[in-house]
Image 1 (cartoon, helix red, strand yellow):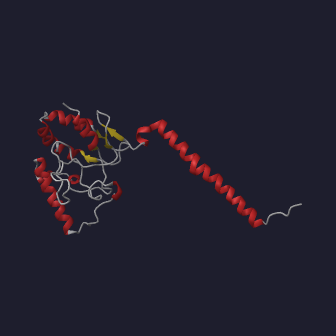
Image 2: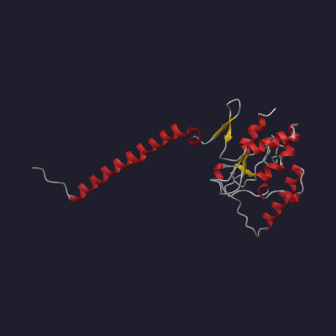
Image 3: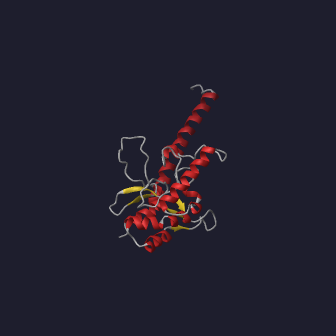
Length: 212
């Protein structure tokens, strides 16, 4: 009759079997099940809420902000500052990397007592007011300050409405047509009472590009 294995060895074998079983359940079966359910139930959201234009080309995610700038005159010049395109609604500023970099998500490290931050906000206020043709005193806060993630896809209704005249003029569209698009793409508060209404910049600009 073979001699029984020592208790410690049997314990290790039991632990190893449990490890293998849990690895299969939690590391293989469960992820496959959740992935399958998400693909069937809400595949668009599960795949990153990718937005496509009328031609079927992917133009971004409705969950992530991005720049809408004019092409650089010299793409190889790292010192050339990107300029916002007046034909598009502009997002709020981003401190994520060089701007809307998902690999460097985060806010600015400057605090409320920073003279550098104060000056940058003041400069941004003047630049936005001049760009949109409005009084600097009326420029909304989200037009001159970045979000905590630096990837915020939404802007306030006030900032969207501030840009209507500039966008309409740049595109030679009636102001009321652009205003109706802003109203259409204004999203209400989460669950009816959390946060403030906002406008998704990518979805609004997509609709704008399809407007004749």
